[in-house]
Length: 311
Image 1 (cartoon, rainbow, N blue to C red):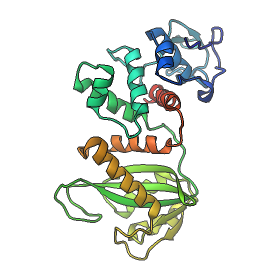
Image 2: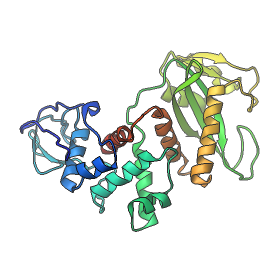
Image 3: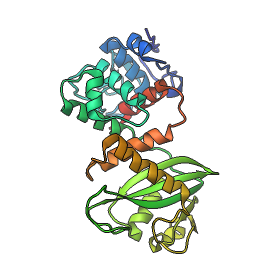
Image 4: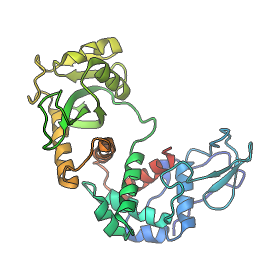
């Protein structure tokens, strides 16, 4: 059984950081560590307040431990729950089932469908499984995550399957997705994917400013909308003189576009609505940026930590 140590109450700081909190190495340990609601709540507590307790009402740092998963702020007496404001808030299902579901999702190399999750952990309905998956996808975006840096390729791609519509940046009835990828020699560093309404200068420049550190080297094609990047504090390199899509002079982002479309088609049969597309993009980014993780347990801990910090 996992033993999560706590400091004596009242609590002013935690000796934990997320990276030092242990994680189960396999399904056997998962079952041994998290066989009850209390054990799950204690683990979530250690993850949510890994850097020390912060009262959601007054910002105070001193608290007393109550029952598992709850603390009372010493300053304002607010009773804080570890699941409040997270994907587990007001759930009717046991946390043991949530932990099993997150373990299952993290173990799928290419993601999985709601139907597969339903069958894997024995959820009673497809609707519940579908809802859980989308809550997890929302948690895959880290609030305040660091911006991309260094040399970054940026381009757009069209997502839309076989829907009717023209080709190119103005394709009707399809979704336009901005792709940004850090260049690390011949390899790809971190990536970001964002659904954007159009390819105008205002949209593209704002999107780049949201995902890249000022001073980064942005590499694009010759599309005129990117011309204003230097005024936004970026170095700008044009990889080709014409904005015609399809040429492979932006190999990193084109590789990401290819992998993304194959993933959407293979895992989700391409059946992704425009309204939900960003959630699927967030899952792809989460998996791609952690592709070097050698342990399912590491991904499990990471997604749980993000789940209790997502508001």
